[in-house]
Image 1 (spheres, rainbow, N blue to C red):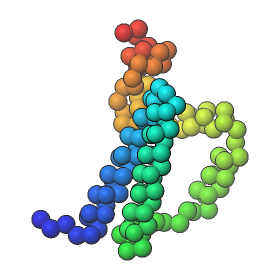
Image 2: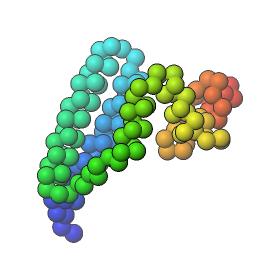
Image 3: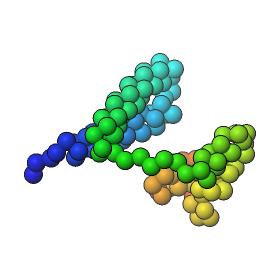
Length: 125
Protein backbone atom coordinates (compact mmCIF):
# COMPACT_ATOMS: atom_id res chain seq x y z
CA UNK A 1 0.00 0.00 0.00
CA UNK A 2 1.43 3.35 -1.03
CA UNK A 3 0.51 6.33 1.10
CA UNK A 4 0.17 9.72 -0.51
CA UNK A 5 1.09 13.08 0.94
CA UNK A 6 -2.44 13.62 2.22
CA UNK A 7 -2.48 10.37 4.21
CA UNK A 8 0.99 10.96 5.63
CA UNK A 9 0.17 14.53 6.67
CA UNK A 10 -3.15 13.42 8.18
CA UNK A 11 -1.33 10.78 10.22
CA UNK A 12 1.23 13.36 11.38
CA UNK A 13 -1.54 15.81 12.32
CA UNK A 14 -3.44 13.19 14.33
CA UNK A 15 -0.22 12.13 16.03
CA UNK A 16 0.57 15.73 16.97
CA UNK A 17 -2.94 16.12 18.43
CA UNK A 18 -2.52 12.97 20.50
CA UNK A 19 0.92 13.94 21.77
CA UNK A 20 -0.35 17.41 22.65
CA UNK A 21 -3.19 15.89 24.67
CA UNK A 22 -0.73 13.65 26.52
CA UNK A 23 1.51 16.63 27.35
CA UNK A 24 -1.54 18.56 28.56
CA UNK A 25 -2.50 15.76 30.95
CA UNK A 26 1.10 15.42 32.15
CA UNK A 27 1.27 19.17 32.87
CA UNK A 28 -1.88 18.92 34.97
CA UNK A 29 -0.35 16.05 36.98
CA UNK A 30 3.18 17.48 37.34
CA UNK A 31 4.23 17.71 40.99
CA UNK A 32 7.07 20.21 40.64
CA UNK A 33 7.48 23.54 38.91
CA UNK A 34 10.58 22.27 37.12
CA UNK A 35 8.73 19.29 35.63
CA UNK A 36 5.74 21.46 34.75
CA UNK A 37 7.95 24.02 32.98
CA UNK A 38 9.76 21.35 30.94
CA UNK A 39 6.45 19.77 29.95
CA UNK A 40 4.97 23.15 29.04
CA UNK A 41 7.92 23.90 26.75
CA UNK A 42 7.57 20.49 25.08
CA UNK A 43 3.82 21.06 24.74
CA UNK A 44 4.36 24.46 23.12
CA UNK A 45 6.85 22.92 20.70
CA UNK A 46 4.28 20.26 19.79
CA UNK A 47 1.59 22.92 19.29
CA UNK A 48 3.92 24.73 16.88
CA UNK A 49 4.55 21.49 15.00
CA UNK A 50 0.79 20.90 14.80
CA UNK A 51 0.26 24.41 13.42
CA UNK A 52 2.92 23.88 10.74
CA UNK A 53 1.36 20.59 9.65
CA UNK A 54 -2.12 22.17 9.62
CA UNK A 55 -0.93 25.12 7.52
CA UNK A 56 0.72 22.80 5.02
CA UNK A 57 -2.43 20.69 4.75
CA UNK A 58 -4.62 23.78 4.44
CA UNK A 59 -2.52 25.35 1.67
CA UNK A 60 -2.58 22.07 -0.27
CA UNK A 61 -6.35 21.80 0.10
CA UNK A 62 -6.18 18.67 2.28
CA UNK A 63 -7.87 20.34 5.27
CA UNK A 64 -11.11 22.24 4.69
CA UNK A 65 -12.28 24.82 7.23
CA UNK A 66 -15.83 26.12 7.21
CA UNK A 67 -16.35 29.77 8.18
CA UNK A 68 -18.20 30.27 11.46
CA UNK A 69 -21.90 30.97 11.12
CA UNK A 70 -23.24 34.19 12.60
CA UNK A 71 -25.17 32.29 15.28
CA UNK A 72 -22.09 30.38 16.40
CA UNK A 73 -19.98 33.54 16.48
CA UNK A 74 -22.63 35.26 18.61
CA UNK A 75 -22.70 32.34 21.04
CA UNK A 76 -18.92 32.51 21.37
CA UNK A 77 -18.97 36.26 21.99
CA UNK A 78 -21.62 35.80 24.68
CA UNK A 79 -19.68 33.03 26.42
CA UNK A 80 -16.46 35.08 26.39
CA UNK A 81 -18.28 37.91 28.12
CA UNK A 82 -19.49 35.67 30.98
CA UNK A 83 -17.76 35.30 34.32
CA UNK A 84 -15.88 32.09 35.02
CA UNK A 85 -18.52 30.82 37.45
CA UNK A 86 -21.30 31.27 34.94
CA UNK A 87 -19.24 29.65 32.21
CA UNK A 88 -18.40 26.60 34.30
CA UNK A 89 -22.02 26.16 35.37
CA UNK A 90 -23.27 26.49 31.83
CA UNK A 91 -20.67 24.03 30.53
CA UNK A 92 -21.68 21.55 33.19
CA UNK A 93 -25.35 21.86 32.25
CA UNK A 94 -24.66 21.47 28.54
CA UNK A 95 -22.10 18.72 28.63
CA UNK A 96 -22.94 16.44 31.56
CA UNK A 97 -26.20 14.59 31.36
CA UNK A 98 -27.59 12.59 34.30
CA UNK A 99 -25.55 9.46 34.87
CA UNK A 100 -22.43 10.91 33.25
CA UNK A 101 -20.95 12.65 36.30
CA UNK A 102 -17.49 11.29 36.98
CA UNK A 103 -16.96 10.08 33.43
CA UNK A 104 -14.14 11.44 31.36
CA UNK A 105 -14.20 12.60 27.74
CA UNK A 106 -14.28 9.02 26.47
CA UNK A 107 -17.22 8.01 28.68
CA UNK A 108 -15.04 6.01 31.05
CA UNK A 109 -15.18 6.29 34.82
CA UNK A 110 -13.00 9.01 36.33
CA UNK A 111 -9.96 8.36 38.46
CA UNK A 112 -10.34 8.66 42.22
CA UNK A 113 -12.12 11.99 42.55
CA UNK A 114 -13.19 12.19 46.22
CA UNK A 115 -16.84 13.08 46.67
CA UNK A 116 -17.72 12.89 42.97
CA UNK A 117 -20.44 10.36 42.14
CA UNK A 118 -19.43 7.56 39.81
CA UNK A 119 -15.71 7.69 40.59
CA UNK A 120 -13.51 5.46 42.69
CA UNK A 121 -13.08 8.15 45.36
CA UNK A 122 -16.83 8.39 46.00
CA UNK A 123 -17.02 4.81 47.26
CA UNK A 124 -14.03 5.18 49.58
CA UNK A 125 -12.02 2.48 47.81
